[in-house]
Image (cartoon, rainbow, N blue to C red; front, side, top):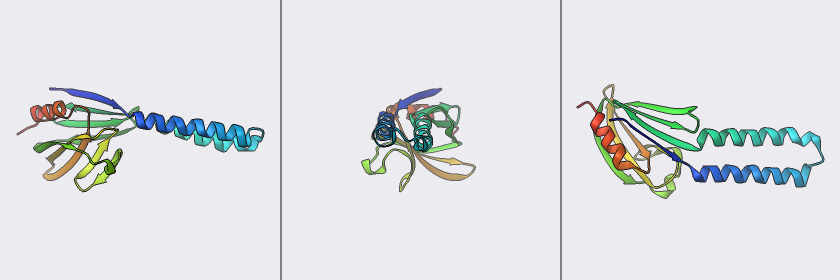
Length: 151
């Protein structure tokens, strides 16, 4: 069973858009007539736009015994070879864990928005590992992992 789902990070998109608009307004009002300030403004704005493209969505894919997570246009991605699935649990992620890629007491968290996640405990190369994957479809992701896992 293959699984692929993308979740857009509206908070990230809105935040980066507001930052770039704020920078444009600040530049126009404060330094609009000074060409020496244009280069730092352009560099910062370009950095924010590129960062927004790199983080605007999270795609979760299960293919065989591989779980792949990729952010934005795919430059930031993670691959987990799940040899032995030990446990999966649908959980509610506390608000203070935030969004993005985080180290938490329950394992690494990969999310883009929302409060639902699938906590996955598995063995890979003999080592026990834990990750939490934020998704709008935790039941479907859990089923895809269980169906594709080698037992």
